[in-house]
Image (cartoon, rainbow, N blue to C red):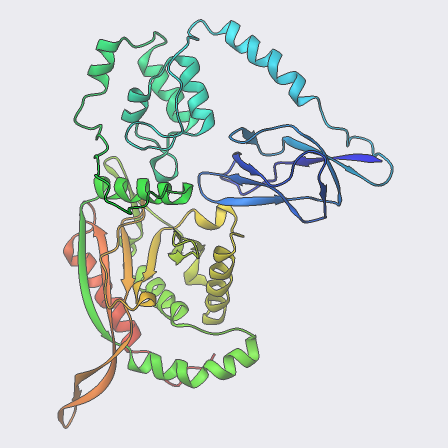
Length: 432
């Protein structure tokens, strides 16, 4: 019998480590090739790690909540065949303890502190790595609550802690000093909600907590303003009805309204590039690439935003295939971390739920998000060279929420109007 290593896979350029959230197999279990062995989570997305070959899970080297770097061995699998050179697993478990002891002995500031939980007093998520460093350096939960994290959803990263410790000094904080560092105002106490007869308590899952933190942070960061436009999309609807059957027969998949809207948004961004920016302190970062986020509802009821990179460089067929691919893999939890990061503008389709309009919250660090409502048949005034008439038209509301710190009403209103104009001028004879 041979032994092979199950390692933490590379999950994108921006991801260096992941947290183990659940082992799906126990030591001694038989596993098939490509069968999921464990679940992991990064700051961007949850995913599963499959077995590279069939065999028996011989040894688990990391436990739930452990943070593992990309490339590290997380388990040993026993497979049929001869052992290959270099496949034996390093003695990670035996090596970890001496290293940890050495680090503690060399740290003059290592002290015992309160045991930190996964969430700070205000509900901010604290990763196992952050908790470990904080406990070692004597950083209290109250102090962590005051830190502005630079990670996804305002999470505190290792780099945030290192920077904070450099400014804070190595001495532990006294109770009096803690009160100065952590004033009562910013730390919002959780409200006590009374329970009624038959009420049910449902604990938020990890993704729902991330969404909650991210949305709250966005409202606290940006000055939200929303502009609305109603667009006559009759030509677009008629074109899709004309080509949808032939397109599905030719491409093997459906064409929806989403890629048509994404195409219009990308065109408008190229014309008004200052909507495609981010804010960093008192500076504005103008993005070179147009990476469109596509808000997607999951079967769990949660929301995820996969990203179409360089959407302006794609033709309509490419956009349609990308939209379908990302949506399908989002619903089956098959997205990679890189596919849900790097967005510069987001589109959300509230019409999916029958809503005619919405006021979406900006997906930080972007400065604008557009919601598209349901397409409804309505009587509308039609202007002709021979006079105005009333006709049945397909109408849709577009709403743009934007950050008024850097996007004024002139740009925000002009942008959503331009998207509407592009959709209204859709070429009914367009070839695809």
